[in-house]
Amino acid sequence: MPNPDQEKSPISGNKMEKIVALAKRRGFVFQGSEIYGGLKGTWDYGPLGVSLNNNIKREWWKMFVESREDIYGLDASILMNAKVWEASGHTTTFFDPVVEDTKTGERFRADHLLKDGGVDVAGMTLTEMDSVIKERGIKSPQGNPLSPARQFNMMFETSVGATASPDSTVYLRPETAQGIFVNFKNIVDSMSPKIPFGIAQIGKAFRNEIAPREWLFRVREFEQMEIEYFIRESEWQEYFEKLRFIIHKWHEHIGLSADNVREYEVPENDLAHYSKRTIDFEYNYPGKGFDELAGFAYRTNHDLSAHMKASGQSMEYIESDGTKFIPHVLEPSFGVGRAFTAVLCEAYHEDEVNGEVRTFLSLPTHLAPYRVAVSPLLRNKPELVEKARAVFLMLKAEFGNVAWDDNGNVGKRYRRQDEIGTPFCIVIDFDTLGENPDLLDTVTIRHRDSGKQERVAIGELIEKLK
Ligand code: GAP
Image (cartoon, rainbow, N blue to C red):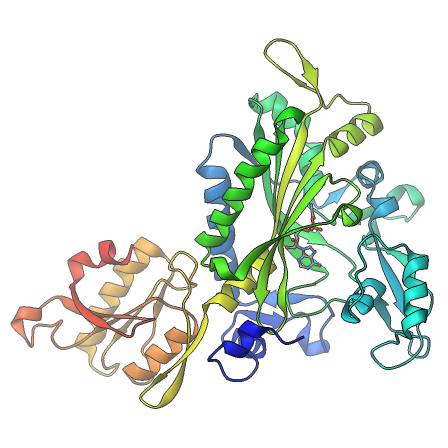
């Protein structure tokens, strides 16, 4: 279905394709195992992609952990005792409905095929999906008949140790959340937090998606940024609203416009097995329209209760008056790759400079891979290069993410830096060296989005670029 906003966009052609091409060309994202033909559902982040990703994660950590007194950090192992997934319900319920093309054997998500055909699949059983597929004559994308739908567990299984046996089976975690639940007691014992409090974690998660698709949107290996916020049951609505507000603030902070982010209340019959209420935060992806960016669920005390029962360890919190209870939990859960995609989509712009199309990423300064690029007006004038290097090293010591760019003429350098979202370009010219005595030790700063230039004293640069 065409996205109406995309049609209004002044960007010619397919915006998403342009972003994916730019991401490859400029070292943001490469196909995983590309020289061997790739591996579906895996993507590798290049130098600029790592920077953007790290900046997103660092800002998230600052906002949700460092700027608060009630949220604690954690980094749990990816491999966990298989009993964790039995207790959480993932071994028995973490399924997606799969159908096969009866001629090619290719597998597809039954619910996705139905949704693409305009069917509301919320709460549908496998048998119901089969009947609708039959009734409507839904075929595989290749036009072949489909097999009956069956459940497919999305956890990757492997084994630990030298000999494989049922006891050695482990799973790559499909969500970081369980690492938090199984460490609940450790954190309560070691940090003595006062309820309500949260535990936050950023880390890899793995899902054997039947149909990885749409670039970083649905992949098999991805990163999550998750918080489990522990509360008294009676307070869940109050804290649900507080966290909901902060999630919007987060999306604002990474530069997403309010028009492109919306909430979707997940209907009761489509809630995950652990959830009593879930809101998906959706982003208006170009060419695709609104789809999930992050999730926010009220998980009750499902997980802690299940781990208490299965492990025999108490997951109770003891109030100062001695009252014991198993806390309930609110869970804001963000996919790093989806945030990365949304940030790029929001930032991608085209305009016209001197009759030519200019592409620029209007990334917020706190997310841009490089904060500033420094260059000498001419690379073959040692006195300019020497001064420019001194400015570059001064800024690099302060900010770290500073680029040196002396290739081609200044106009070309600006275009290159615009395309990767560098907010400022600094040029050292003969006036910096005192050709015009009034401008001695000043440089030109050129602003990415407006293209405007200003003259600033070297001594004021750090303050100016903060
Ligand atoms: N602990 C709750 C949980 O994992 P989820 O809705 O399954 O909930 C949370 O996942 C977020 O993780 C999603 O909103 C999305 O941003 C990201 N995510 C989930 N599956 C993904 C996949 N296959 N590829 C990329 N991101 C994914």
